[in-house]
Length: 384
Ligand SMILES: CC1=C(CCC(=O)O)c2cc3nc(cc4[nH]c(cc5[nH]c(cc1n2)c(C)c5CCC(=O)O)c(CCC(=O)O)c4C)C(CCC(=O)O)=C3C
Ligand SMILES: [Fe+2]
Image (cartoon, rainbow, N blue to C red):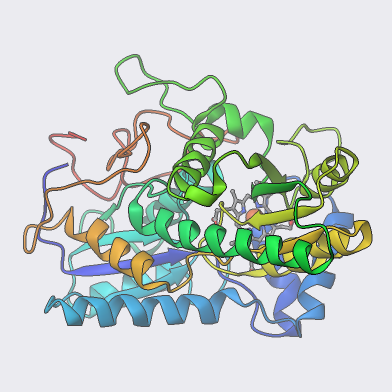
């Protein structure tokens, strides 16, 4: 898509509760119309309760926003960064209104989500699209979005660093135990999604780019994991796999598998004694990482006697923050960066999503940043 003169950035995220009283209303917001059984909500509420009802995600987003502003200032670029969420305050609609009231007319969104699937791409585009409709800013505020950035070096490099360090720690732990040569496994973990969503995560039209047998969500994770490993000499020859976590939904609906806990048990039976756990699907150490990995998966490792290390998410890693700013500058007229780096053969991903990309299987909603967008941006020339 041709560069534009954006006048503000919106960091769009998931949101999380800020106290015990927020937990249930937050969970209702997340699962509205999504067919999640009450027992699952009850179960997940305990994760938040155990953390005082406070998700770590909001403070992480405040820190990310501050880091992005600092990096823009450092480069002498005058672009304010607003922040809004899908499921909790500040809500995206209020954020767009705030940006508009402050005089901005053309904003570029960055989401805290790197891959392509309904939950991580289209749903954010719908959040922004519906916010435009709700506020009545449709046609008055232009909203675009940076490309999904799973393969941007700024996202990949912090994992390269983390996996390298994780491998060293796990090997040192095994040596301490007197089993320095015990088999080690690198386990990349991401959010499970319904199989139907995984299959829908792709461009649908004939000329809309490559289609992927396993869906773009899985293909992007596999390619990114490989890109991380290719950059770590010490990882050569180490076995690895992609596993899934945080499954919800009704039991009879198939979701991506294997679950990380099952995978850990199977690997242990196959001889693995050290595991590097890589939260490849996530941008910050929020609840899905703090609970499902640091509490549950690490507990499973402890029970089995596996030496384990959980690698950090990109968070506010300087390379990640610089990468997000580079992604913004790919799209701006001023300070434009013409280079669109990609660490995998799949990318760089589209600035403007192809028709039906990451389809909402529960019915159409207004979206931005797609060839078939009904709000957000007039798209005379959809380009890349
Ligand atoms: C792909 C994906 C990402 C990664 C991309 C991205 O980052 O956006 C992600 C992130 C997150 N998911 C999060 C929390 C939750 N996700 C839920 C439910 C669901 N997630 C799904 C998918 C994803 N989720 C799906 C298909 C569902 C089923 C309901 C539905 O079809 O929509 C539920 C409901 C209860 C449950 O069943 O677990 C909760 C509480 C938090 C916040 C953590 C915090 O508070 O720190 C974050 C960052
Ligand atoms: Fe989720």
